[in-house]
Length: 123
Length: 176
Image (cartoon, rainbow over the protein chains, first blue to last red):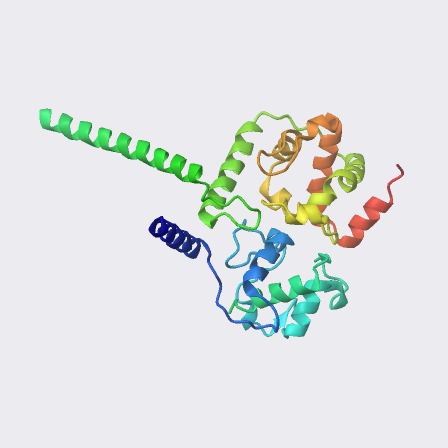
C-alpha cells in the first residue's frame, strides 16, 4: 500500500514537472512571483493583443510582441524601462502616455508585480 | 507478387493497430482525470494552434455560401450601438478594456480590431450568427435580428480605422 502510494506520488510529481514550463526563477521586480505572473498575464487577457513567449496564444499584433522585454531600454516607445515604469504602465498606461490605445485593464497591484516579474525574465 | 501483397497487408494491419492503440491510450488518459481542465492551465501551443486553425477552416467552409448585403454608413452607426450593448463586455473596443469576465475567459475572446484582416464579411456574419462551440461565443441569431447582425458586421469592419476618441464619439452620438 505504502509502496503504491509512493509510486503514485512520484508519477504525479514527474507529470507536473513535465507539464509546468516554469520560467527562470529570477525575480527581477521585488516581491513579484514570475510563475504566478505568467498565469496573471492570461487572466487579464494580455495575450489577446501581445505575443508573449511562454504563453500559449494566437499570432496577434494588436499590441507589440513582448519578447525580449527585459533587454529593452525603452517601453511603449520612449519610456525608460525601469521596474517602476513597467509597473505603472501595466496598472495605468494612460498615466505615462495619454494617447496610447492600450486600455487600463484594472490590474491589481500584486498581479501587476507578478506580471512584471515574469516579463523581466524575458531577456 | 504474393510478397508485395503480404507487405501491404502487414503495413495496413500495423497502421490500424497503431491508430486503435493511440485512440485507446487517449481515451484511457482522459478517463484517469490527470488532464487538467482549469482555466489557469493553458493548452500546449501546438494543441492551441491546431484547434485554432481547425476553427478558421470550419468557419471559412460553412460561411462559403452566405450572401453579403450592401453595408452602408447608417448600418455602421446602428452597429456601434449594438456593439456597445452586446460585444464590448467580452471584446473591448478601441481604448476600452473588456469587463473582467471577457478578460479572463479562455480562450480569450480578444479584440476585434484585427478581425477585418482575419475574416471575410460573410465569415464575421456566420460567427456572430452561429457562435463558436467551446469558446463562449454565443449564437446571436437567438438574441438579435438578422439585419442587426449585418449592422454589427458593418461596424466591426470599421474598427481598425477607429481611434479611442472615434469610438467614444460614435457610441456617445447614438440617438437611441
